[in-house]
Length: 495
Image (tube, one colour):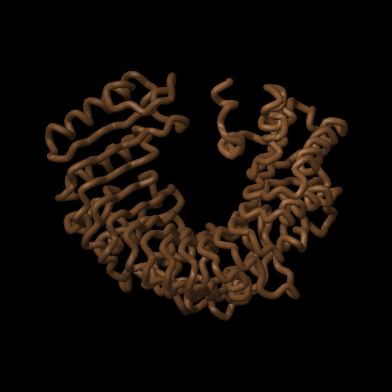
């Protein structure tokens, strides 16, 4: 302890900045040397769960919540006007929003550059208006990173505030519901913004445009179409004017049009174009052959689904990517543009998520348009069976079976979510037979997923099959299984 105490104040404060504030505030008990050091720490990390060590029902006690409020008030008061670089606050114990905003304003006045908030207010405290962030936050000239997570709705936009947060480079908002004005106005209000993540978005305008020459990373997640948001409409249009974007994570209801997709420097993209079950049914033959006949039916969304073919414009804007991940709904939508699929000359890594209710109709065309593909990662193998997916899978026997795989240059395949069913074993055999350049296949069993491998007889049979695959194929096939006892990944033979 003497050696540590002899270190310079600056170094000791730097060490304390890595501790939760509650622990740092306890260091004066060590000796007089530590009496005031914690007050000079530029990073504050306040977590009510660490402070209260909540037990069942404990956080509901008024005196416990008040003791947490008193602690935070003492910490901020003891530091006076000393500079703050980072303020991280997790508070889900029902502190009133006015008190929370007072704490936020305190660190804003002290020049905080990194603000991380995780809050949850009671309905009684915010009533029907939702949580309103303090106006001072929108006027900060020091904020560089801002992360806001809350279980409440957030009405972010202030129509009269004009350009704001001139130093902000990273913005992360994840709430139960974000009410935002037009993104076309919202994004330019942060002139140096490079990273933007917004989850659970509710667009006020169905014609959405993201425009920024500074953005490098962009994640947009709509509220979805899971039946919980019955008022959600498919966007009329969604445009991206982001010429310097490097990473895109886009999850939203399918738009009727993508008029502008300017992302020439994009390296990596994850696309989730969501459709509900009714729309999915309309996308498939023979229903998609009569969509035009239903355009005049105001009670039918056939005319909307017909316009989903415009998704090819989005894909054209992604054709320079090196890594591409497509979720199951997206594959279903891409079935409308198989004949016009762009060529992805730079694509090296392709990730595909599958589920039984969504089809692989677009998979053959997609694989044929990736001439330099090296790795495929499949999250699941089961999918809705159609005659148009048989070219890439073993679902249906047909003359051109495996045709799209024969021309695919991929040398590594990862399969996740393996459950040792006969269908999945057949698919694995299919890939080994038809992928001519395949050198390595890793098959993963997720620890908590139901699997036949817990049955010793099935486990033995599967391992024997994998041994046979290795003997008959030039590809190295590995079954990677989670050890259910010590939760470590082990290789085949240790089930």
